[in-house]
Amino acid sequence: MRLIKVICFSVIICIAAGCTKQEVNPGPAGYVLPVPEHFPEPVFDTGNPMTAEGIALGRMLFYDARLSGNNKVSCASCHEQKLAFSDGVAFSKAGVAGTELLRHSPALINLAWANNGLFWDGGSTNLESQVFGPLTAHDEMSQDLYELIDELNAVPDYVRHFETAFDDGLTIQNVSKALAQFQRTLISADSRYDRFRLNKPERTLSDIEQRGLELVKQKCQGCHRGELFTDNDYHNNGLDSDFTNTEHEGLYLGRYRISYELADLGKYKTPTLRNTELTAPYMHDGRFGTLEEVVEHYSSGIRNSNTLEPRLPPGGMQLTAADKAAIVSFLKTLTDHSFISNPDLQKP
Amino acid sequence: MKRLFTLAIAALFFTSCSDDNEPTETVNPQASGSTRITFDSRIGNADFALNKDFTVDNKTYNFRKLRYWVSNVSLIDDKGAEYKVPDSYYLIEEVGDMDLTGTINDNKNIYPAKKRESVDLTNIPAGTYKSIRFSIGVDQKYNDNLSLVAGELSIANGMSNISWMWHSSYIFSSLTGTVKDAGSTVAFKTETGLNANYKTLTVDLPAPADFSATKEVILNVDITKVFDGIDVAKNPTISALTPALMSTVAENYSAKAISFGSVVK
Image 1 (tube, each protein chain N blue to C red):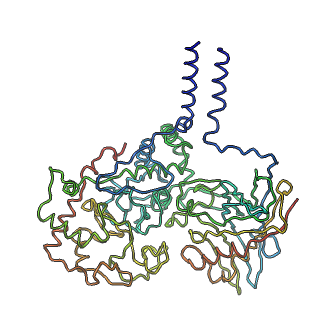
Image 2 (cartoon, rainbow over the protein chains, first blue to last red; image 1 turned 90 degrees about the vertical axis):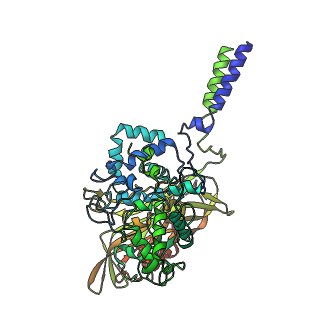
């Protein structure tokens, strides 16, 4: 009798314990983003908690050409890991239409911290919304959303993965959530610079690289700020001074296209300097082919206009040849070889 | 004992786990009500229709499409308390067959003709209500995050954003057709969107209504007022690219076009 009582009691406890939310709603276990020790905490609140299952699914989708209308283009077509998830050309023709895009594909690096808008002009508030841009654009992946759901439903493995990762299974919203989760794992924080910064014994920076670091701190880190090497903000860095071309829905007007504030004419998002050696060509339109050209722009090529970033002198920074070389040397220490060879980020 | 034991376990299974994630139903001693809100599109006093000429102020309009999001509906009772209708996002539309082929890709893509002007509200707590409050458009939380769904709101619903992708947000309203002015006819497309143009309005009922005895509340939506203050023939394309005009249109939807029509008991 006593035994039965004990059993009865334990069963009650077991069942009662079974009523906690996690059990009633058997969802995937939460995932803790590994934040590099010298990075700030990422802040994003998009109703899309990360899980190992969601990330794995996002990785499958990222590399899957089914996501495009002609089943030939995947996210990775323009975001290659070996190029720090950029594509190496100014204007990609990899899209379904085969025509040149009008802006340069951005590198995908440390996106968990990119919480001030996506795209060069910040038109998208978060990765979850951004996904629908390239997915449906006729010159990019040109995908009909209903068709995509049918195509994914035809693959039992996908159905299973969606059901494990999300309570409501395979939906177009969960395609975007999974892709966002995977993209937030694209963390790069293990370059030679990082090892130097964290006083790791095995790697140091040369004298010229350290001189470059000092110059970058003084001259560049106003915008390419902190350990992320970006302030995630929008600036006019003196590329152009004429903003009268309103073609392509205001494509050439910078962030003005989104905000309609005159003060935002010619402003584009600050890209990170991390892995910059791998992400040529540079700027929103890929106009500079080399880092030397970029540094020369800041030294002598700044074009003045009402919205020019106040940190930039209208006549350029007038750097010496030695300083320019030192800056380029330092920038190359931001290349993260473990990032571009990380097996967790490769095609599954 | 054994039977009691089984019973106890059965009871646990049946009671303890059921409602953890679902809203608990409020036990209401009085019957809850339901009603229908109809957004009756009009051109002045005439019924709105597609593919039909309407002449207003010497301009002849012929409409092809009318669509807008009604969201965040709430009912305000005679004591001022607000009942928020959960997940209330409704796509109001009147469209003919629309050939969307070529908007995303070249595959044949026909959006079938649809007329939807009514919204059914159920489980309204008993009471007498004096006003209906709702918004035209989509609130910032949802407008900024296309991976969220609520009610009818979904990127996969008919009004998903395929023309304004650079903003990655919803088009709040869309009205298209042709307008003939002084002999020349131009096609027009009037769209609104963006967070600043999310507008909320409150329509007062002439007398407080008990929704257990009110079948329908009809709101008049005068489409000509959408263009109030704007010469559509001269501004045939209104969208995110014309922010000032777009904001006038958004304001017109909320402040001028919609008014109380009648109550059906």
